[in-house]
Amino acid sequence: MRDLFFKLFSTSHFNTGISITAFSISHFVYLILIFGGIALGAFFLNKKGEQTREKALRFLAYALVVSYLSDFFVHDFVYGEMNIDKLPFHLCTVMCPVVAFTQFNKRFEKFLEPVTALAIVGPMMYIVYPASIGDGEPWCYQAVQTMFFHGVELAWGILNLATGKVRLGLKNVWKSAVLLALITLWAKLGNLILEHNWFFLEEDAFYIGLVESGVLPKWSLMILTPTGVFLIVLAVYGLYYGVKAFCEKRKARTE
Image: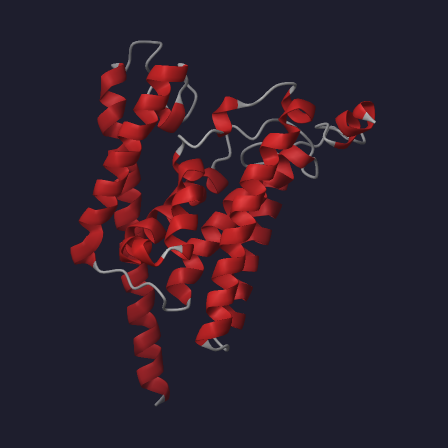
């Protein structure tokens, strides 16, 4: 039975030589599936009532948590040991419990805007450049689970905006900065205790060794990494206002 599970969760089932690496054909297929699925979901939910929309968001939050927690039970078959990189210290993984608390606990609803913004930015960055996904076949468990997890988190964030549950206000963007600062401190604590590179505070996110080669001092990543993410948050706010203005202008023309 154990040998069977090793085969089921292996990175290659048919020895095709096809792998899901950054900017490969498989990667672009995943991009189409994820963003296409989110667009269809937004189109479908906009025709439904508020209750249906809320059920869909709750379903995505449940799927996110189940995908994240269940993954730890098969690490032995996939990686040969527990993969500590998936502990909740990266931006995307720490957002999993944060999304759950925000979705299911009324007390956390006041944090919906910054949580939604980071639930979009974190997985979007990873999906666009999945540098740590490995070199397994596109349909292997490791690839499917990783892209599914990030895709669901991204969908939850985007659909919060698309359904109108969350409205971004530029005057509130500072809340995302505060949340990013807290995540940075949390990730640094994990790095100090377990000697890892969560949230890319020990080495650069592009895996080119900028700290190791002496190009960047390690302390600078405590500033550069969250600042870079925050700039993308600002871009999301800008895109949100642009799409909103376009939709309002188009609606005015049809009336």
